[in-house]
Image (cartoon, rainbow, N blue to C red; front, side):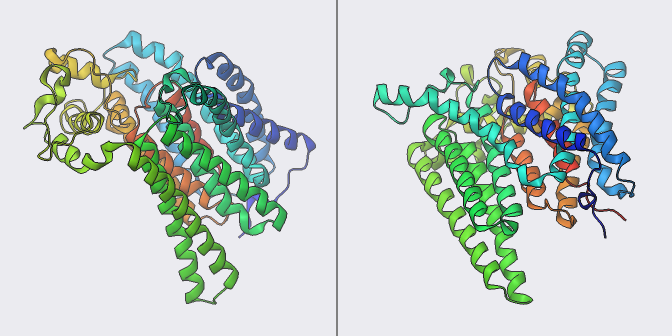
Length: 457
């Protein structure tokens, strides 16, 4: 079996194009979720799209081998999603003016993001040694966040400064989105690249991973106070620990390799230590953890407790213990109602990314107060917006990437699998289903999908 990454490009221009795509993507990832950056994002997407198209043309022109059809599945699903969005506008639109505006804005930028993301993924295949440049862009946004946070924390003599609305991220969920992707990306890169590096480079890569990861986790605990951010990080570290454990088991069952056992054992202990340290700090600071299970049990009973329709007017149903976290109840109750009530009633969606749950809720329950806009789950929101086909095409693309990454023979194996799981998880618990969040989602699907274009017949 040959691999595309073993066939070098023949022209120097390809090297420059690949570096340009990686740098553009790094800056995009660093600013995508920040306030007031739409003009710069548009410029970068406008510059990156023709570069990516030309790079992809040269890539496939100079690599004549046949890529297995299965490797195209994620990209084919992305293409199907765009076709479905257009089809929906012409045949199922309920709000044609809003939908047309989103087609010319959000969906157009999303298409450009897919093109740039796919080209960047192919570029990383050629230059896996510079993959950390992608995470460096996000890391610099967190550096700026700390530049804003540190003076305020010092002036108030309180490291638990919670005025996150003053900072560069518009709402803590955008910080969680960027941080989770950085944590997953750094982790996948570490596991993929670490074995092939010399000692000096290994130390540098490990330190960058450690600093970047701890920076995001500190922000989760002391700046954003976000339970879902810490929860996602713990799940990602648990996944990585499982992967390392399997490596140890395979080594013991075949020909025991002391280096493999020690390396993976060290990683497991480090992952557990970091996740445990920040997880425990968050547990002590946020009392919402203690009632989470009871909150969920109450929240899923949407027929027994209709409070979710207008909590401001109807109040919140308290669990037997009396402990309660309003945000946990709202997230679960609204997502449950979206899945069990509104999706079955609207299997093809309402056609708009902007507040589809709020539109449907206010139409069905006029006394809902007109202030509830989201279920806080992007997958539910996307399904409410464009129906079950949208969920199949988008989530199906990520799941296909996950399965393909398991069997890949390329140089990037852990990165696609960990990133795809991280994207699935963060979009499950985050209200990130419109505008830049959609652009980021489809960028990553295209990028990770391109990272699997390695095996050929």
